[in-house]
Length: 152
Image 1: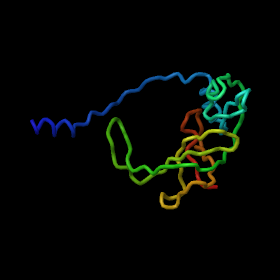
Image 2 (image 1 turned 45 degrees about the horizontal axis):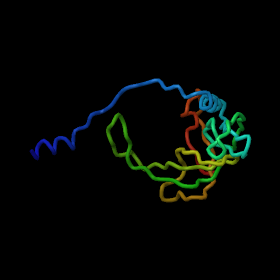
Image 3 (image 1 turned 30 degrees about the horizontal axis):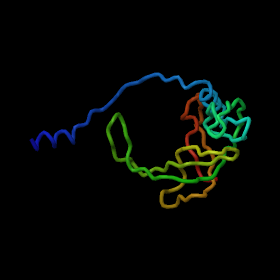
Image 4 (image 1 turned 45 degrees about the vertical axis):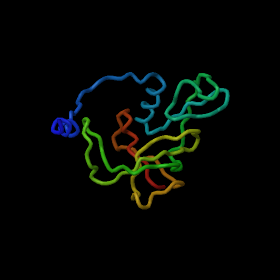
C-alpha cells in the first residue's frame, strides 16, 4: 500500500489545453487601450472612485460606471511578494531566478493593480517605491503589452 501512496504523491499530470474567453466590453476597452500604451480605469458617477482594470458596477454604490479615465503610468508599490517557483502546464518548477509581483497604486486609481516588478532586486525592493509602467516595443492589444513596472 505504501508504494501506491508514494506513486500518487509524485505523479504529475500536465494540463495543456487552450480555450477562448470573452472578456466583455469593459475589459475589452481596457485591453484595447493597452495597445496604445494607455491604462484606463472606470469612474463611478456617484462616489467618483476609479478602478483599474475597469469593472461595470461600483462595489461601494452599485452604480454602473460608464466613464473611462486614463490613469497615470506611475504609481506607488503598496505590497509585493517574491516568487521562487513557476507553474507551467500543471507542473511546479523552480524559477530561473526570484521575481517580484507587486500591487501598485497608480495615480488616479482608488484600487491596486497587480503587475510584475523588474529593475530592482528582491533584496532592495520595498513598499513605497515609485514605479513606472514599461511597455513591450510592439504592442498588440493584449494583457502582456504592459510588460512590467520598474523604479522611476
